[in-house]
Length: 335
Image 1 (cartoon, rainbow, N blue to C red):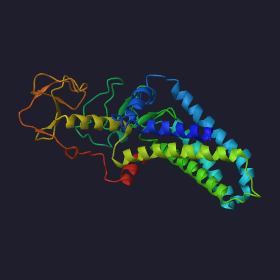
Image 2: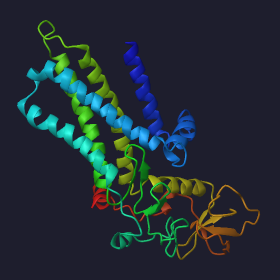
Image 3: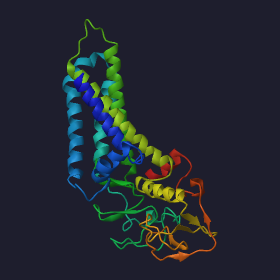
Image 4: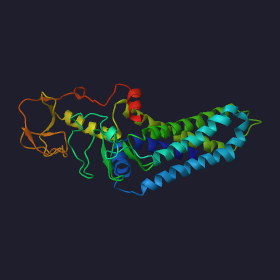
């Protein structure tokens, strides 16, 4: 019981950690976000050893689960499995899951320097992304939806994040492998957990006695089914809203500025932030109420506006990268 309690507490901690970016203004999510998520998972410059330790931890843990399955679980429950599970489902899940993980690690996403066709795929929205802008680091023109990765040294197209689990940037060109990896892990763990629970509760308690390794395997599958399921749901929720992990923070910032009454638009649909010292430090209030700065972080020149409207609702901000449905957005990312 103590072991089960500890597993439950651990799973709860991980779930709260994964949800902390979405609820970072609420306790206890704010603590997890500030002291764990941000320095360990979001800041690529700190603790760089994590990009090697975490993938090693994953594959080591996956190997342990497969070892438990082959050495203890299958010999004990083989008679309770259907033929198609033995010859198709189990081999497929065991092979495909790490294969998709390996592809997510080795297939690089498209970058702005080497993929001229993909560069033109998304238009500039003149809100988050502007034309005629060069990356300050690699000095290459920045396409819409791109982001410079300091670890990869390139501007990644439709950049989502540099994934700690595969030590690779996730973006246009490898989304399909990354999401396949997520789906495979989630499906594998859910299948393993539900199948073992069914076998255990329908067994003959007199003639069928299973080793403790069955319980361990079931707990592991159930725990990681929850963790993988939460992470997969969060990623798909971003896709449904037509944004990436990188863009989510930008949208949150804009929404905060809007709620403060400082986001304005001109009749020609140009966007400005009212009374800030620079487009990268929106919290610094300027004494001159007529000072406005473009939402373009590469344009530090202040403007004086006479004809503008203050935005009061997030529905007034159009996300042009949202195709209208989860499937439409998902298809565009992965093809």
